[in-house]
Amino acid sequence: MRLYHFTSKARFAEIFASRVLKRTASSLAKPVNLHRDYERGAIVADNDDYRPVVWLTASPVVTLADLGLSEGADEEMKLLLGDSKTSVRLTFNKTPEMQRWTRWAKDNQMDEDMFKLFKRTSKDTGNWYICEKEIPFSECAEVKIDGVYIDDFDSWLDKYRIESERLSQLNKVRFEAAGISLEGKDNINLTRAQLRKILSINPGTA
Image (cartoon, rainbow, N blue to C red; front, side):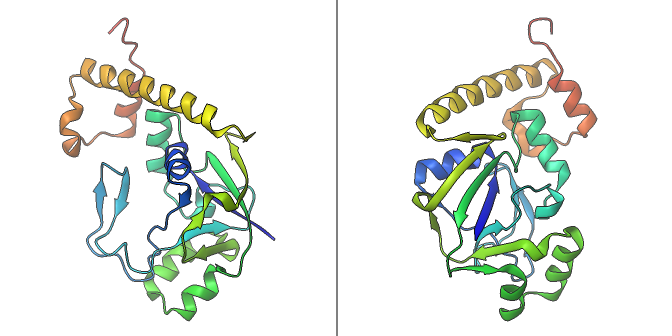
């Protein structure tokens, strides 16, 4: 049986560099003090390190809703970086450590409210799996990025870094043209419409 881990191109670059899929929050316990971590580009909680897991799915094709993820944050990622939390698909052969999420959650007495929330936000939880151990990248059977199978990871990573730097500099110029300094990004509170308008600025004519 094959299982899949979906992630962004930015996270895949980290996975390839570290050669391991690191664990993230399982929400086995109700999150404490949810807040935005701008450095990681994610919503985090103070107790994310409680029983962390690597998330997997038996579904080879997914939507954000299938993974229980927010459309809003992902749209911002697409607008700013041309990236998505489903841009990259890593394929693994199932091992005994990879457990079906629904059973694992019940066996480990997951917070009832969190369990109901996951079931409500995704209709695909029956295909979810978790692994409580980090997964070596060497166990990955294949990598698909933006719908294309990749095997020359070094070349891809070089191109990705160049493009990421280009977009970062371009966005910095766009925000400055709109009179917004990214230095105070913790205080930036933009609507999606405002963000689209800023990212439509052509630096050459601004």
